[in-house]
Amino acid sequence: MFEDDREDRREERREPPPPRANVPGWLLPVSIVSVLLCLPTGIAAIIYSAQANSKSQAGDTAGASRAAKNAQIWIVVSVVAGILGFLVLLAGG
Amino acid sequence: VTTSAPKDLATLSPKPLVTPRSVCAGALGFAAAASTVLFAFDPSRAEFYPPCPFHTLTGLYCPGCGTCRALHELLHGHLAEAFGLNPVMVLLIPFLGYMLLPYVAFAVAGKRVPANSIPALWTRFALWAILAYWVLRNVPYYPLDLLAP
Image 1 (cartoon, rainbow over the protein chains, first blue to last red):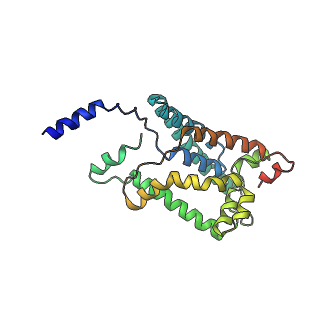
Image 2 (image 1 turned 180 degrees about the vertical axis):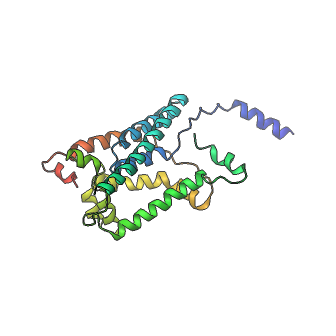
Image 3 (image 1 turned 90 degrees about the horizontal axis):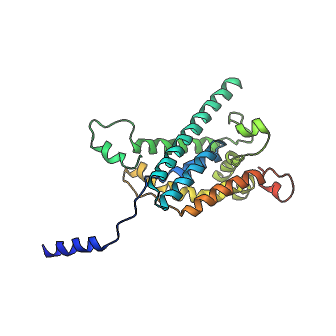
């Protein structure tokens, strides 16, 4: 009982944790991989993932989530463009 | 957006086909298959590898040019040849491995591992370094021409 109370008070004195934005850790590495696999649209993905990391660590939760979403969109664009390009080359070659 | 999904999905029944774990496992399987093909067939000789769209359109090198050939050399243990084809890619491999390891662990063991994070300054440095690399490896004079594949 008393142990619990003390625990609670200690909890109150502690500083509130900084707000954490939802920036998945795979965004930046996957963006870089997409650039290294000859998908120049991956540069946009890198720009947005770098932005998401910066904003998340600066405490800008909303901005980080938005940048992370944009990064995901550009990763999907890169992958789809890559698959389409490959199919076009297969059909044409 | 995606980090809270696995718990919610795990409590659902029947189990959906597309879960975060199945996506991770699919990506891992694709990477393994691609590595096998890359190991077996030399991109500088085989004809079925797609060419770089940027290089085909502009005649210039992109930051990724040489990656396929470099990975082929790496898979055969030829570090120096790989470095000569795409030095930045070779240098980035430890970083990429560090960042993606939690997802590999998740795909294999099914256990959620906290994502590795790096300082925001490094991510911005990586962005500018790759953009600078894009320009510099197209300069046709020594020593910058060493960056070309």
